[in-house]
Each structure stands twice: as C-alpha cells, then as structure tokens.
Length: 262
Image 1 (cartoon, rainbow, N blue to C red):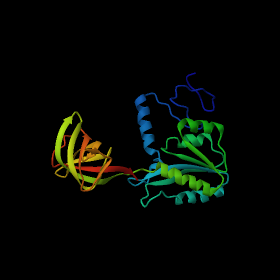
Image 2 (image 1 turned 135 degrees about the horizontal axis):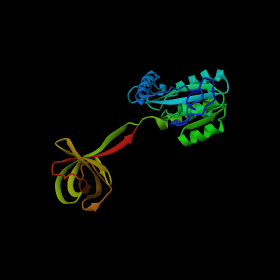
Image 3 (image 1 turned 60 degrees about the vertical axis):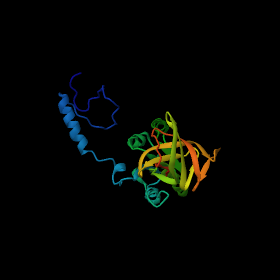
Image 4 (image 1 turned 90 degrees about the vertical axis):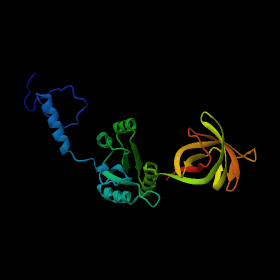
C-alpha cells in the first residue's frame, strides 16, 4: 500500500536498528530535510548524566539500581554515595543514573549500554533471562545482593578497579659516566661512578646531558672490579652495557628510575 491512515495495522521495513515500542517517527520526501530534522532533534536531547559534573582527572562510574521495594531505593542510593576510592585524592565517583523497582529487564540493559564502565546492581531482585543474555554480549556487569554491607564492599573493589591511575616516576640512583668504550648497534659499554642511590641490573635509566634528558636505556650487564654483579651502590665505580639508541658520552649522567601507578 502507499498511504495508511491512523489506527491501521502496518508493517514497516528498512530501519537500521529495531526501534523501541512506542517510539515516534516522522517521514520525509527529501533526505536533506530528514537530516536537518534529525540534527535539530539531537540538539534537544539531554546530555548523558553519567558524563556531567566530572572534574578533570575524575571518573564517573554510572550505576543502574533496581530493588524489590521503593523504600530501599533511597537508602541504598545514599550508601552508594558514601563510597570513596582509596587514597587522599578522589579519582572516581559512583553516580546512579537510573533506578527502579522490580526485576532487571532487557530495556534496563539497553538504557545503560551506551554508558562506559556501567554497573547494574540488583538488590533482592532477579534479572530476566533476555537481560542476562544481552548484558553478557555487551560486557555489562550485573551484580546481585541481599545485604547492604556486602554490596558496599563489592562496590569499593569495583571502584578501585575502575578508577584512573596516575603514573609516577621515582629516581632511585644517579651515576656519572667517566668513560665510553665500544658501541655495537644499540648497545654501548660505559664506565662510571655512582654518586647517589644505586644502579641495578636490568634497570631502566634516563640519560642526561647538561641536566637535560636526551634518551632512555636499559642496563643489560653490570660489573664492578671486573666481576659481574646485580647492583652497585653509592661511591662504587662500575662498568656496564646499556641498551639504548642514544650514544652515551663522558660527562653524561644516568638516572635509574621506577615507574609506578597510584
């Protein structure tokens, strides 16, 4: 058929994806008019609540909460708001972006599927079979609880796993290069003296010239008094083979460093 009046049962084809039941749509004769209307509609849509209000360096973890009673919703939401990540600096925060009473349904999964790192919490409720299947396919975490303190303990661990990490570099040793010997490809034999801390075998080093970093390398062989060793400490003279693309020269400094995530 070409036209269809209101209340007429019809079948429509060619949707890119299945529309939700009850969703409204418009038809256009011209593609450009359809695109203009879609852009206009998109501008009116509310921003995703899980992305709002997060300061730089802080991650918002969205939660969909379902309980068996309406009275439980507010109490559990307050408990979730109390959860903080470990350490003085708060780098993550839970935000309940949707909540309701009853079992976890397929529509619940679809509503939260676009939210990164989303978690679904079911308190004294179950999930529909179709909801579990979709959640599994989309990698969405669903956890069920019947005791509040067990839920908060689990969420503390989930926050720790999801919070942003900050990479820190700790200098544990400094040495001055006194002599530079042979070099083959990306390996070079050098000699020097430890002036602070220690150098260790297989350690990563920064190479500094006039206090500016010019490259990095790795200690692949370490000797003192022509005897192989795993460590040389402050005041010791040493010889070592450094694996690096940078050519090390007498007078350069090398700094042993460790990279840690906090």
